[in-house]
Image (cartoon, rainbow, N blue to C red; front, side, top):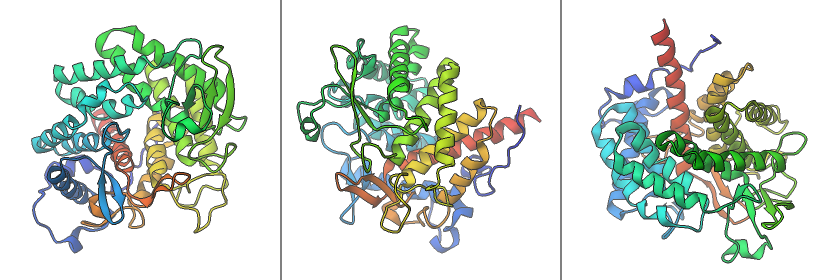
Length: 407
């Protein structure tokens, strides 16, 4: 067992500290700063909960100086806010947070019937999945099963993958795709792996493994950077083109796309033990961490292929995803990734990226980028950045608890 754990001081014992923190009125000048992260987290989320309750909506981001809720209809980000509330519940032990998590996930429960997206894993694993893990509520499991059954309907056995976007509507219909698959789709597989564990039905895991294998074979360049979109022929299964939708160019390395790949294949290894997935995850991690364009603070710009400059926006959400993935990867790998993850969390906890109390419309993390090609969500908070930041802290704390228990 590797004994190289030196959890950064302002993340150490966060869960223990949160269990005794009151969410009452505090002087913001006294608690702002990374050393008081354990106080800021519940207070910031209290503000978002109040907005969400007043607007009967799930906070997603900020636009034109106002909080923007999830889109009407289907929204791939809908599960992140309730998922964050489940983490805060687990941190504090305060049942109020569980009640709020359940309320906000109920706002998107009907999305489990939506057949037009691959992102049911994002939406339901990160909300109802945590709820079921923590409460064992069988009603939550029913929702998860229904979502999983709808998700695997998008699987094409000839391609060996779940179709990402439909191509008969929206901007996707203008790209000439027939069966597009995106690297982001690796993040929807965890729901399927978990459903096999929870139900004993192998059909979910079988689809997840096939999709992971197809992604492994078609998405990665020689340096282990990833394409964003691969379009397939649904009849022959042949890859037709390699493109991007949110990166700088078809041949560039969209930062969050690299993060999705790292996280997705680390997760795939966790559930299967397939060494090919572990090796790929290690290679993706090394590509990101050794990239000449990765800034000193390890928070990447929007696309790693671009020379860093003040004109190229940062994407703190990508750093949060990478940090969380590296913590898990470190537990499997003979290489050392934990110190890099700790540094990322430490930098995200600095005043440059972590909002002060009441700032940032109560979101935690600043300087995120959604999609520059679509001119959407540029240099704003994003609910998924907060989610993966909390998950990274949760995973760091789990390491500390394990060390304490093993003494």
